[in-house]
Amino acid sequence: MSLLSLNNVHIGYGGIKAVKGISVQVNAGELVTLIGANGAGKTTVLKAISGLLKPSAGEIQYDETSIVGTAPHHISQRGLALVPEGRGVFPGLTIEENLAMGAYCRNDKAVIASDMEIAYQRFPRLKERAKQTAGTLSGGEQQMLAISRALMSRPRLLLLDEPSMGLAPIMVQKIFAVVREVAASGVTILLIEQNAKLALQVSHRAYVMDGGVITLEGASPDLLTDPRVREAYLGEAA
Amino acid sequence: MDVFLQQLINGLTLGCVYAVVALGYTMVYGIIQLINFAHGEVVMIGAMVAMSVILGLAGSGVPPLAIVLIAVLAAIPACMAVGYLVERVAYRPLRSAPRLAPLITAIGVSMILQHLALLIWGRNYIPFPQIIKTQSFALSNSETAATITNVQIAIMVLSVLMMAGLIALVYKTRIGIAMRAVSQRPDVAGLMGVSPNHVISFTFVVGAGLGAIAGVMIGSYYGIAHYQMGFLLGLKAFCAAVLGGIGNLGGAVLGGILIGLIEAFGAGYMGDLTNVCTLNKFLPGFSALCEANSNMAVFGSSYKDVFAFIVLILVLVFRPQGLLGERVSDRA
Image (tube, rainbow over all chains, first blue to last red; front, side, top):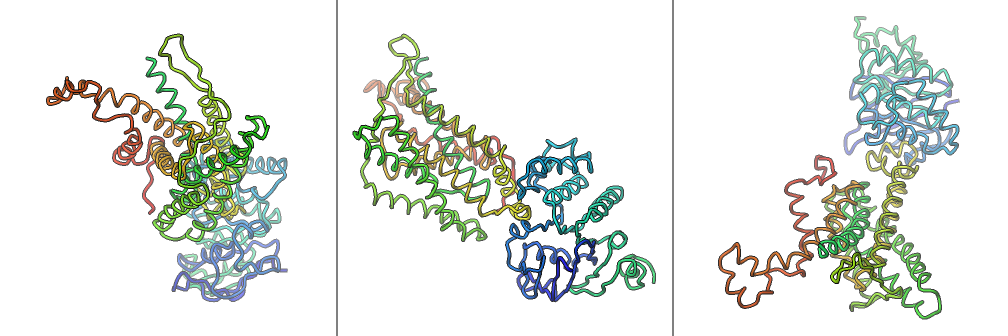
């Protein structure tokens, strides 16, 4: 069954249509990726799912109920977490406080503390800097924090917006290893990436977006060898 | 020395009140970048409600201390309700409007609240009932010793407790972290499951609660209540918040106390410093005035209200981000 489904969704900013009728399904337990060039409308799709933007037409269902027009905090309370583009850490809050914000909707202090410990084990860098404000972190560290913060809510569906953007290759490897690990632990993930090769390598299924529409979809291993994808997104001659 | 000590005590007392009021300005500014000019009126309503309760209960046999406590406990929820309603009715619909719109609205709300108070409590100065007798304690044995009153001690102790409580709230509690998160990135805070509207309402309510207590304090300090009392007090506290760095809690406390001290020392020494005979020593042309009346001063202590605004102008010119504020690009 699908945990998230977008059906013919249109989204515009003022008069400009950024997304022109896309349909996407994400089934429970899947790692699905949405790839495409800069400006294809990928981030807009994630913003609409998390409630930051309202689609002008179409239907978005999460866990079998429509979430169109629902406020972001209500959507989040239902187990959907977004790691926003540009990481969106709270720069004036400490690492620890950022993580605590991730667990804002949960009440069990003991479990929150143990989840925080898991985050620190996953990224020891964060533990070293637990009392430092997030604004002092490097880009890679902020990405670690943003992902850890999203996981603090124990989401059922995790939306990742360009986690590799602006990071050194070694950091990208580290982040993607964590994405894999989180997916393996049973969290459903919708990943948006410009780095198509990496995204297709970690995901089960993929959608290719261009100019506000889905141009291709299929199993990730198939798309990885698809000549159209290879030419347009992997920088290889077909 | 006695005069100096006396002005220090007076300045600290006033400064504590300004600091508590300034916290209300700075909290709201920190979270929605709005100067809530109606905050001074919330303080006035706190004083008025407390005064009404005290007048109503005086002579009823309830012990004076209990009456004051009941008055404070009545003023707090009254002000909180006003603070909540003002945000809900006047500011929230303008949340995404250009910043000038809510600012002008704030001035409008300030006038509306003043005139509502005028309708309820009338246009006259009302003596704030002194049901707890003011006692002065001399700080030395000399004839001219500086004194501190029980009201001043109560104001300072209460203010310090409230400031400490607020800082603990903002830095140690879940809702406090959420307040700071909303002030930094409201959208992202929403993604964490925080309702920005709830947090903003909460901020107004807490600020108004502090304002209520400040109103009772200033009413009992000056012994008078008036429907316009919040206006000047609010503006001075606003100056204090700007001096400290608006949006910064520590800055509001520092700015409040500094403004209180500057005002007290200014009022205390202005007459001496601008005495015509003193000026005559440095400047030509005052000798005739000095001979005519050696006690005459160019400016008297009634000019005390001007200091906060001189400070405001100096801060805006030389250090617009305030003493503890960080320089931020203008988002207007």
